[in-house]
Amino acid sequence: MRLRNKVAQLSTTKKLIFSLVFLFFLILVFRSNFSSPTTVVSNSNQKTPTTSTVVKTTNDDCTPNSTITNASPVQTCIKTPSSLANALVHYVTSNITPQQTLKEISVSMRILEKRSPCNFLVFGLGHDSLMWAALNHGGRTVFLEEDNSWIEQIRRRMPGLESYHVEYDTKVHQADELMKIGTDEAGEEGCRVVGDPRFSTCRLALKNFPSDVYDTEWDLIMVDAPTGYVPHAPGRMTAIYTAGLMARNRESGETDVFVHDVDRPVEDKFSKAFLCQGYLTQQEGRLRHFTIPSHRARLGRPFCP
Image (tube, rainbow, N blue to C red; front, side, top):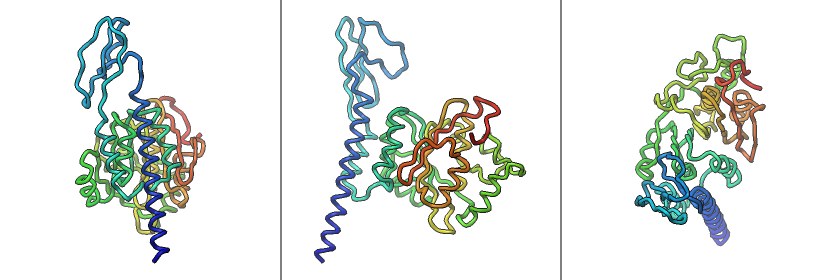
């Protein structure tokens, strides 16, 4: 009995430490985005004011201030954003921690520090969803989930998250067959042709997302779903392929794509084949980070470098 109590105490302590460290990271990100002591321009993309004019930031979380003329620069008045506040309360009061480790989360967080507010697409809706939305404060974070009943549970607890139900018609035990189809450059499937997934002839392309998901250029894509640890689960074969196709099909720039659980055969092989080892930027634990450039911006670029 004492041993059980000790194990329980250690588990609780570990979760508390993780929560405190995570909250510290959130506060750092928040402060780095909003603590500039210099002249601040409102969020309406207007030109920088002259030295005789200071405009305080206006946003949904703070009452707009009037323009102050002939005055020294004044720091902005900002309340804690609702996305950050919800995440703080959730993780402080929850005994459940995100599935990714602190080191794995830090890889994506560093990219979000550079690119947020941005468009962030996440395959999977779970206990880490509030964290991703908070780290992308001011941007758009969308979650794609296979389990409709789980979506309803999460919506009741976290109504501010944007999520959509997605159906998968593959199984993990079909992975080898799908790999042959996807890597057959001479085949008729067209899996090496870059374009809109909705019009792809490749069996690996997912075509049942809401139209807006295809029409948006995603700056970050996280593949942490669907379920892939048993033979009859959907597996992440199509999710990984479609993420890579969407990244290549953007008009310009680069997309940061992350794949979790690369210690498993499907995630390992499919991320290397369709996100390409030449685009691999970093691996930390079970997380791989790929940086994929637009293929529309430079015609003739090979599918993999």
